[in-house]
Length: 273
Image 1 (tube, rainbow, N blue to C red):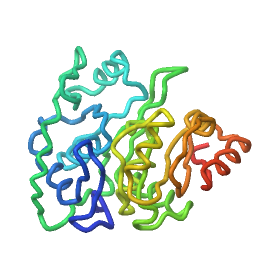
Image 2 (image 1 turned 30 degrees about the vertical axis):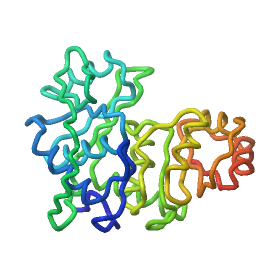
Image 3 (image 1 turned 90 degrees about the vertical axis):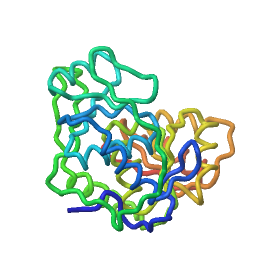
């Protein structure tokens, strides 16, 4: 087994939510309560837009031995295609959101009852916890099964490669979706296995990125793409100090990397090509 989250104390802040900080104690309570409320199904599409809420849903699904399906697109036709291949799957959605043709379960209000079971839940390293799909640009999207052990291993390898240590830097802000593999690894798995604070939002515009960074304690890693990074470099916005820029999804040119490092006074790094 490997723990659901690692290197935290019960009252450490795991993430900032729309209502303020969420502690590890509250997170474990939220996961436990949601796990009890989920239907008895083999798989789900976790469409929750808040990164913290997505993590709660992801954790609850694992405790119920349910696989989280991660399609490359949120387009309803894509979701229906995936759901058709995975019988009895359902969507976990935000309040008021539904996908025609798929059973949807709305995330209940996270009460934060602060129940503490005495330890962090453990997940079997061999358990298949997610299935990511190729884009399907040249053929039908192909599934890529991910075990818990594989996700934990990539999170630790990423941290080792770029010198991320427990609790330092303090947080992670991401402009990328957490339903895609880069976002899942860099903005969810990396922080929760190194005791970092996760920002729950997905800021897109430079001003929004600046606001998100100001909300975080200390310096943060920015998880982004060359497209978003170029926009931030060109913006007339004074950003807080960063620890590192982590980019993927398309090639990061040397010129843009150099501009970003001069603009933010932080190293720009690239993974996944």
